[in-house]
Amino acid sequence: MSFSASESVSPALVSPGEFSLTNISALPPLKLGIMASGTGSNFVAIADAIAQHHLAAQIQIVIYNNPEASVAQRAQEHQISTHLINHRHFPEREVFDQQIVDHLRAAEVEWVVMVGWMRRVTSVLIDAFPDRIINIHPSLLPSFPGIRAIEQAIEHQVKISGCTVHIVRLEVDSGPILIQAAVPVYAEDTPACLHRRIQIQEHRIIVQAIAQLIQNRHPHNLLLEKK
Ligand code: GRF
Image (cartoon, rainbow, N blue to C red; front, side, top):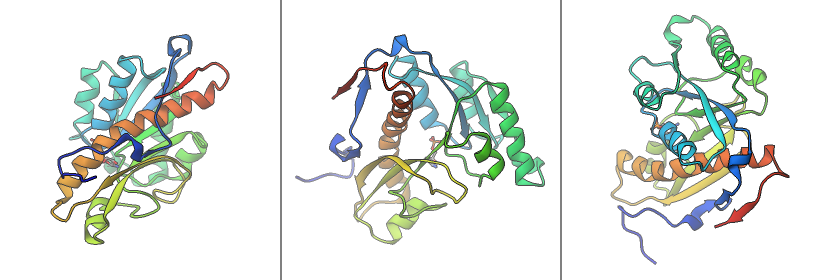
């Protein structure tokens, strides 16, 4: 079997495999808080999955730290509340994180989803939502944590990379792994080209990870269908 650089990869390379929730209309929605710093394509994937009734979830608020982040406009287009908390206005990370916690709590958030949140977090945030914060990272962790994950994958000439959704711990990009997707890396790949290939998979696994959270929250209420 051969791949071409433009081709998306087989669903078999997502682990654990995909499942769908069949009776989601019966479930109270999981209340999500999104934290993002960038363009928000993962936010859109989540919002679209909710709108299409693939996830029994509701986005309560989108918190962003960068005034230029286009995730804010995308959230507003989806009629979802946004709140800018600019880290540059906070001398200490803990005070910044406390502001975030206050807004997440005021919005009655149950689970926090970091999609491209480009700040280190402190125990203020972690302890406020213990084991209830997930993050998406553009590598097959534990390889290439931190920034420049995609560039590092290319520099190391890895032949397979991908993306990971994990529970957030204090150490950057550590924590129990919930789901991963693998993609091929080609000799001619630029970082932008590899990122595009990885993002196709990110949009799938971030939705799958939230589906897992919903399943774990309602283990007896759901019929799960293997695709
Ligand atoms: C994603 O590639 C994510 O893995 C990384 O930041 C990027 C955010 O993309 N942490 P987007 O803003 O959701 O498009």
